[in-house]
Image 1 (cartoon, rainbow, N blue to C red):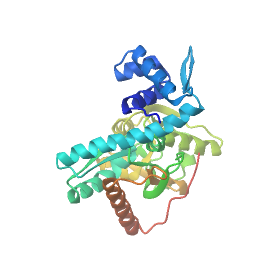
Image 2: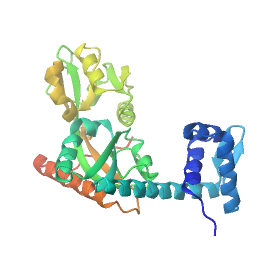
Image 3: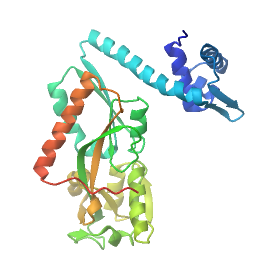
Image 4: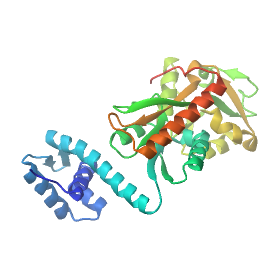
Length: 313
């Protein structure tokens, strides 16, 4: 019976993720020779080649892919063990790693987390912002417990549960030709320069797909990385943008912006909760998951609306 220590597993994951023994060494502050020695030792213990080595770097073999999958799971459990035991010693009764896209953070997630932490003060929640398109993969790889993303991104083998929804509107300067309209179809906006979001790759893809259905191409004046930057550009009447009403309306008066309802059925968008398939959540993570679901059900009951219409790019 062979065994592999956690450090070697961690280094093997680093080699696979970077595609290079040298880069893995740089990331882990070790020499390439030390990392290479560990890889050779793992292969010797297992009795099978795990890495294909070439001048371009390294890639895992079929056996290496199997080890990588289980190594990630083992290391996730190992980190959980270290974290939870350490936190119990400090009086913390649980630790949850949560990933979310920026829209959820701008809209409803802060209130949901606040109400959760008020009733669970001994549970620590670490929140990280990521692109929707990246979140399911990170959950599947064991980098977090729960993820919040848009429903139209590929979710892989994760378990997906409906969460919240929002409504996209056109945000324009009050001097813009579209200003004054109560509602509009998205295709009516395609003759005007728009603002794209580097942080919302999935939404950019969706909007381009919708424009393509109309035989048109989106014209972007610029791409920005924050909602605030978009507000400033719209305030200067340089472009318009399609943004979630729930994220914008509190800032509309500050920047003197006009919000125009989108009549398109797809303008109401869903968020989903992602968790690892066939993997039970820790007690603390399950409590947060249940709380998020409860808050979402309450919000939906108040809205008296059904689910958003699905649209996949």
